[in-house]
Length: 515
Image 1 (tube, rainbow, N blue to C red):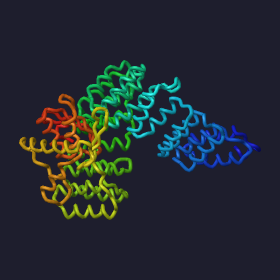
Image 2: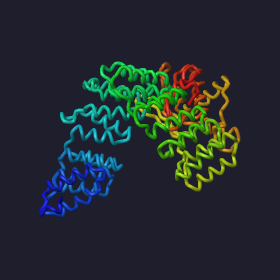
Image 3: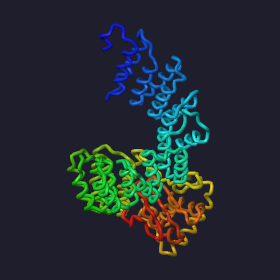
C-alpha cells in the first residue's frame, strides 16, 4: 500500500501499523516504524501506540525502550493513554521495574493506568500498589473500578491471603462495586482459593443471575476442595436449570472433581459424553484420574492413543502415579518417553528417584542423582506461606530465617512428643537419600508445612483455622502429622498444596487419604 503512495501520510502509516498490531504476526510493524521516522511524515501518538502494542506482543524490549525515548522527545509525556500502553508493553516484556518507573514518572494517571500495572505485577507487589491507591485519596479519574478490585482479589487468591481478601471485599462494598458480576465471580474465586469454601458457595448461591464464569468458579471450588460428588451435582444442576452451555473450563472443573474424589466411572462417563471438542487438558485430567486410581496401564494407553501429541506434563502426571503405586517398570518406561521428548525438568528426575527410593533401589537413586548433577538440574525447593495478622509469612525446609524461629522449633519438639504418644512413626520412605534412619527422620522433621503449622499453633488463636499454602504436593509424612495435630490440639488445619485443598479436623482429612 505504501509503495503505491507517492508520499504516504502519517495516517497511511498508522492504518498499516494498526493492522499489523492486530495481525497474527505483528513483527513487520517493528520494521515499518523506522520507515515512518525516515519519511517526510511525522509519527504521532497513534503511531507510537500501535508500534508499542506490536512490541508488547513480541516482548521486544529492544524496541520498547527507544519508543519510550521517542515518546518523550515528541512531547507526549503527559499523554495518559499512550503512557499506559508503554507501561503495558514493559510489563509484558517482564520488565515490571521499568513499568513501575514509567508509572511513577507520570504527571497524570487514570484508573486504566493503575489497573494495567496492578494486573502485571507479582501478587505481593500488586497488593502494595493497591494499598497505595486505596490509602491515598485518588483524583476523580483515578477512582477504583471493578477491574481494580478484581486485580487485587486475584492477588489475594494467589497468596491465600484471606484476611486481606475479606478487607478488599468490604472496600468493594463501600464503593458499591460488589454488585458487579465480575467482582462477585472474583470474590467466589478468592474465598475458594483461600480455603473458605462455605463463603465462596454462599456468594454463588446469592447471585440473582449466574454467568458461565460463576458456574465454573463454583464447580472448581468444590473440585479443589475434594467435594467431587457435590461438583457433579452442581454440574448437573447447571445443565438442567440454566440455558448456559458448559465450556472447556466447565468440563475441566468437573473432571478435576472426579479425579480428586476417586469417582473414576463418573469421570469417564462425563469425558465420553462431552458436548464440545476435547483438549489436551481434558485428556490429561483423565490420565490423572486413572493414574490416581492405580489403573496405570489404562492411563498409559490414553496417552499413547489420544489424537494429540502428549506433552511432558501428561507423562509427568503418569510418573507421579507410578511413584504412588510403586510401579518401577512403568516409571522407567514413562521416564524414557520424557527423555525422548527432550524433557529435562527437575520433576522428572525427582519422581523417578522417588520410585526407586520406595523400592530401596539406592544404586538407581544414586544414578538418577548423578544424572541431575551432570545436567546441573536442581530440585525445586519446597516452601510454604501463610497469612497472620495481615502479613504473609514464608517458610522453607529447615528454615533458619524466621523472626520467631526458636519458638517455632520449640513448638515442633512439643508436637513431635505429643503425636508420638498417638502412635506417630515418621514415614522415612519419603526421604530420597540413602542415609541412616535418624538422619531421615530429621530430614522430614523440618519440612516447610510442618514449620508453618507450628507457627500457626503459636500465633493463631484457638478456634480459628490454621491456613497454610504449599508450592509443591504435600508429602505423606506431613499429611499424617497434620491429621494428628488436628486431633491432639483440637485445631482445624487447611493446607492448599499444588493440586488441591486438604481440610484436617479431628484426626481426619477431607481427602480421605485419596490424594
